[in-house]
Image (cartoon, rainbow, N blue to C red; front, side, top):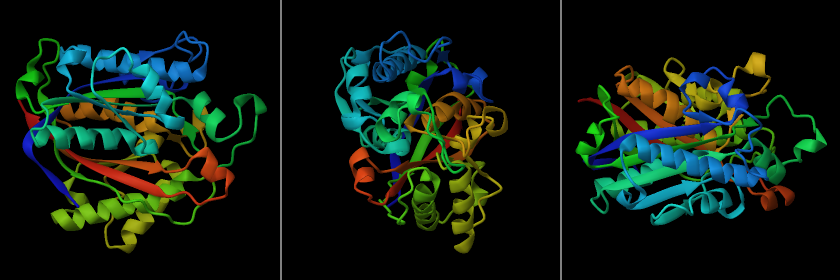
Length: 343
């Protein structure tokens, strides 16, 4: 069901923290902070490093918005680790009511959607949302440890080391903090919560195929409910289908009479140079769409280069236990409509 924001809701600020591989990619200049040494961020485990990325990202987002943690009424956060421990430990220092999320790679969109709904409904005025992933911690949990050196299939995606944080508010005056004077504001105007969809894919090295049907389902429902089509948007951004999932999504949409190929892109394709960096089908992980949106796409919205876009976070809802039991991988896709507003 499409949800329309009854009150103006803005993404006041965003901040991103990434690893070396991401900084070396095509969008490297846009990210706000990086560990230039070894992706440990001064910690002695990969899991602690991911928590530290969340702490740093939220701190920067608050700074960019000119806010303290006590100004934030609700915090949504999630990651790929069991019981969302990356978020639980990483955000302990912040004095904010916390709600943990698990939407896999759709977590950034899920957090923005929930924050916007609360602000639009006047339940709260200002929220924050954080999402992260770390290549090494994800490999340890879902696949083989890095030291094993297992060969990756061509359809496999590379889990992004990154964290993105967003401050969302219905207070328009928040946009005019002295360090934050954009020409345009990024406003969340609508959302389409996703539905879990199981296409029968059980190949953990081809998550794009598992997520693409869910992406098509959510976009199609939103188009039909709002009587819109691809021509109404400057960009339809998914995250993260990668190369394989993107091809499948385009085919599924064409079968329903919608050609989105002219305005569609995917965070998993944008974050790495697939030829130079050898990332197979592209990037994935909660941090992928969070950092691409937070550093690169929203900057274009604030410059007025994108007037209207759809951000469609896609997630593969699997766990180590479900994989060990040979279960198929359901997918989900949450959609957020973002428009630029002249200030």
